[in-house]
Image (cartoon, rainbow, N blue to C red; front, side, top):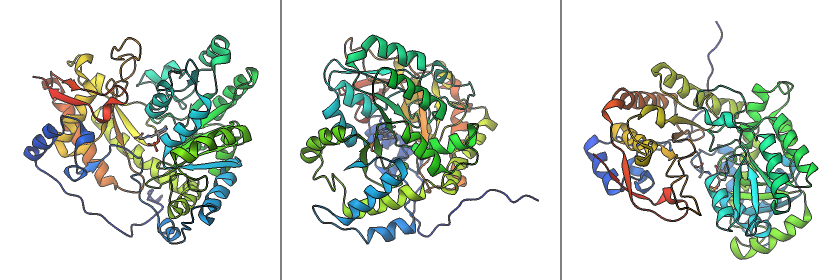
Length: 458
Ligand code: F0G
């Protein structure tokens, strides 16, 4: 008999978590203005709000922390991190930052100005925020297929080359760079193929533009290329990663995802002019160039994390767990963005809470229902997160309205996945009784989802 699949690690340390009663949760979510970001983590049983900074470090990462060099300038830990990044990506210039959005802030301060247009594939909300706050436009050139949640194609995160080419032809001089997000978080943790990265490179070269990879989940992207794209079956994750980066000019990285650290990020590039430009903003915003917002010990842990998580076994364990949860949802007929992505399940709330109008935010309503059902915290990646149009100030209802259930790396077991699946089934079974959603009573201008205050209707 073939042996079943099991994790490529064992557990050395545990952290207790606590269940709660429905009455407690009713009270807590009301106090949180029906915004799960406002809940205390202790009020949550299984936390799927994000896979960012929530992973469990390995014994080797913890051991590396003891080796942190906390020198202000020229710390050994910086060079260890830089060498690791250069070995994996081929980029010689590295600027550490405290997280991904800080990398965006530093690099975009140099590159983006008012009136610019930055084409890409479903820019993540902080990326979009850093572009729009500079009065530039984030132009989404994702393939249309990504919007059909039930369509199964292997690389649903891809850039549409036609849309990209049109953007470059139209906005030529206004385009400071192209940004490709791997994996495409907003479209459901969907990968981008090597073929697509090659097409983007060719178009960029034709118009003499540079390409940035928003690389938060680059290792998961490499896993999908290995397991889904012809010709990559026998390549290692490190070889595939290198090939992806070879097609780009630089990267911004939130190390809190595929670096498996709790905090950290960086910019890396092959171009001295980008490095020189970004340097000017790193020092005032983040800190001196050899720490830029990170402790020496954190740079050590990140160096180890990057190496570990560009190994196949670690990625296979992780992605198989996400697939396990997806299979459970399939048993119950719950619709989600197919095929399941790398870091999360994106449940299609529009298809579940069909009686709730867009204006009452179905995905947010589903998020609240799942929390009330079992203390599971997901988050809305939908109409609230989409913010208002900067010009018309209308809500943007054009995209998908999803409940994202992230799976933190190396944290929960498949028993937890079972609890999530059954809790969602229970909500799904009474979906027709849920007829009203929520209304916004307070919101901020940008990235409103973190602080929005809501009222329940009906
Ligand atoms: N790019 C992508 C694709 C991301 O998913 C994130 C963060 C960032 C950039 C910004 O990085 O958080 O380190 O500043 N995503 C988290 C999430 C917050 O929950 O998906 P950061």
